Image (cartoon, rainbow, N blue to C red; front, side):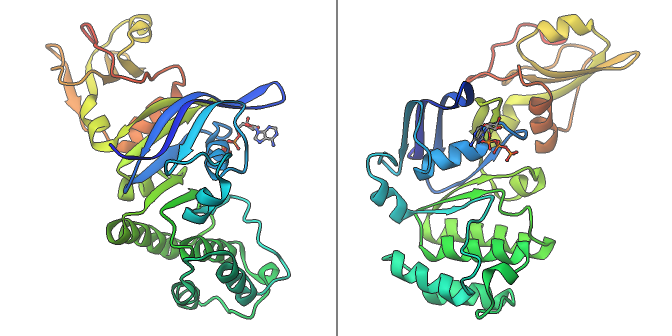
Length: 299
Ligand code: ATP
């Protein structure tokens, strides 16, 4: 796998608190990767480290084969970043922002950026401070895509977009990956969006990588099995069990044990990506870099 981002034991500390710790992961090139995790998990911190806006407190990060700290100009020229807070100059007009994009970026696609904004009915002569939150997000995206980046880092880009604009953005990302082979790392709380466009998934929890992998492979490795009620303590102690729910007579377990057939008396039930992600979010202790070779799960 060619990686657009590679981190090794990466850590970032604010004072005494680790926002990201011992984070080793790879973001595959030419794909859309979802970065998922609860509030405060370290997603924005990881994106800012990749952009070189923060320096690591421990470990290494390599972006498109370069260090964002040692070679900031090389990385910045090839990476588009849409931050959660959208720090656009409030008194600039949209046209001023586009002009700034042209001045600052050697590969600037002015026509594309302008067309994108006109299509969304965003007046080019309006000041940034007079745009709605969603319109500002559109402008940030136009700026990031106008750079013709090799890597696009998006921090919850869809959160302030209306449903149509959100769908258009997702389609645009898929098209950009297909046409230009760009890599996208997208932080999102919207699992339906992730399911729609992402091929790779990273779940961060409390500053650590809880789960990472190709989404199809992860789905194959996990099963929802339902059978006679078992002792909750036994389920909790089994490393293959990601989450367990126990009713009076039945237990439902989400297990990670590739290729294993459920024990007699147990059945498998369909598992959506949302079920899988929520099971990990519910249980921050679950997860390991490789699938656990389970003993008799559910018996
Ligand atoms: P969200 O989903 O809410 O956007 P996140 O996963 O992006 O969260 P981060 O913003 O990376 O999380 O924050 C990770 C941790 O680091 C949190 O506990 C946060 O409080 C802390 N943190 C982030 N920025 C700072 C800062 N500038 N100073 C101190 N602590 C910070």
